[in-house]
Image (cartoon, rainbow, N blue to C red; front, side, top):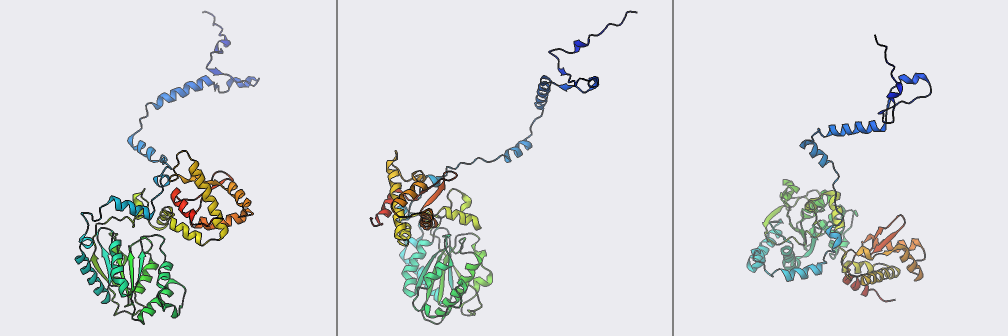
Length: 434
């Protein structure tokens, strides 16, 4: 029987070995579990990658993986690249583009006889104790304004309410009504809108004068709130207060209950009753909703149907500074504030003039002035001696949107005026020279 051969233990260990023995100097480590080397780990990883190639991603997994991915949106929106047109510029452009009488215009706009007949019928119904609600496709603003000037203004006091504007408030409504001579002789029991409505109703119930309220889009986001609707209902119940309103929303009739829509003025108690007693008139004009949609977000279809705070945010973002608004703001501030505005305006116009493209109508922020530079110039010209006084002067402009600001870094700030080059030059001319 041959003798067993001696196995060389060193044959198990080589530089090319896939296993490394880790020893602590004692014989007990011989039975320890071997530790994989880097090469072995790489080989096992490659094997796992090969296994993954056999896993097929189903359409179900692909759908949820794609839907869970973060959407990539661009910040280069159209409203920030191009400044909107002012009311004067828009009217001039539309008058040159569109014919005076489009072929699809309604008979109420083209026929004087049809329009006069409709106006006569409306006045008779108003004096009979009804209020009128105009519906139909197309803007009814132009037609109702004409009715207010040609008929209502000759029969009593007339107030036009633009319900499509999200900046509308009851305070503005009653400020206009308070201009009626003799109204201030009646006692005001409360400064709230309900107290003012009570005083207005009491005054017109004791006099032979009439008040006509022309409300554009009574179904607007602000006018259709519960409080505004309640105040208008308390005014509409007065026999000598007449409301002519327009609606455009398909669900607008749901705003009023059957009792509110049919309560007659003659049968109601002014102190407790609420109601409108509507009569419906078809005012289909086929005119574009240009003015009504001027405050909506044109970049989103849902902008015109947003509700609550979202609608207020959209409207705030859509506010456009005009020359007239800027002149009114400057007329109510101090002389130092006017000098500060003039200084910012001159620097902005100089930056626009020095620009290579020479166009000051887009991206006005690139012509902004730094806050540190503005503070140094204001201090040199004795407009503001410290940071507190400068920020106090800027606060009036910031609150009205006449001066905008943006952070450029942890401690940097830049300011600019959101007016086009031509508009800013015209506003600057109204400020007396130093």
